[in-house]
Image (cartoon, rainbow, N blue to C red; front, side, top):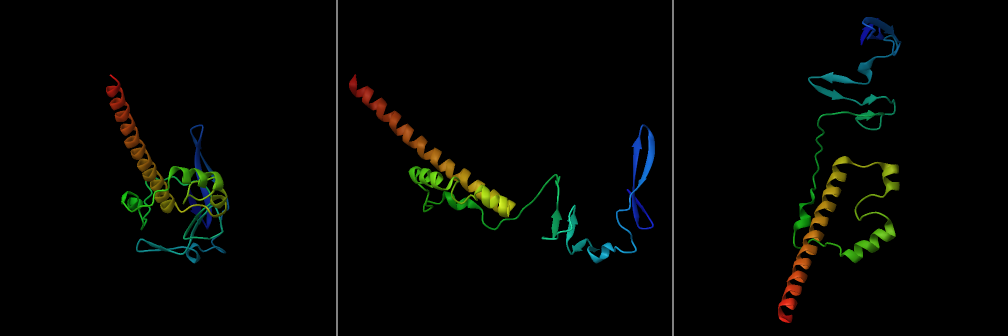
Length: 160
């Protein structure tokens, strides 16, 4: 991509030959990028819009984003699930909640996500919380299973 007198152009190779294609995307006489975006000392101020003119946040993208890494900072991480005083919902209560609401507790419904979207970091924390709760349920089930297996072994031993 290049520019000439405020008009952007693209260059592409077709069948071994370079072709220049001019397309007037913006004209410097009526568009000044500095009115919308400032880059100074490695800092950007203003909103950056890609594929949209609707500035809603600092970075607005109407399309796909590809990145090697995305780092999201979150202030509350659900390690508290493993504290003894954490109120883990009983499985019957959880079943009733799911039957009534059609989603897990603390997880937004599909309608809410369609309307409001999700905050990536907060959603990751909620998903981790659910994984940790599942781990607690599994550990409890394992403990109960071992107790039942021991009881069966004791009963079989007493029968002989």
